[in-house]
Length: 128
Image 1 (spheres, rainbow, N blue to C red):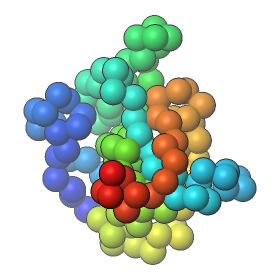
Image 2 (image 1 turned 135 degrees about the vertical axis):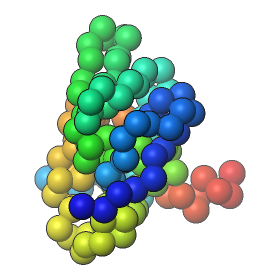
Image 3 (image 1 turned 45 degrees about the horizontal axis):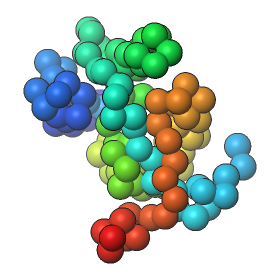
Image 4 (image 1 turned 60 degrees about the vertical axis):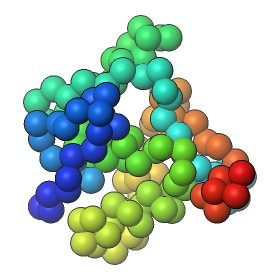
C-alpha cells in the first residue's frame, strides 16, 4: 500500500503519527459541486483511525484511513470527481476502482452533516 504524506487538516496543523491513505448524481454533483468538511468538527487521530467529534450533535464518528483521506480532501476546493482522481493518482490505480467507495463515503459524511456540497467547480472559486 502506498504511503502518503501526513495532512495538517486532521489535527490542527500538527503532523499525524500515521500516514494518510489516501447512486444517481445530484444536481450539484453534475454541476461540479465542491465538497467542504465542517469547520467546527474536532478531529483526533486514534490508533489507525480519525475520530471526528460533532459538538452540535454530541456524537463522534470514527473514520478508517480511506475515509479519513476523503475527509481530508473535502476542503471546499474539490468535487467528487477530483477527489476520486486525486486518491487514484496517490495510490496508483484507475479512478473507476475507487469511485463507488468514494461516493459511499461522501454520502455517509453528508448524511452525518459532516460535509456539505458547495455549488460550482474549483475554477469558479479561484475566480471569486
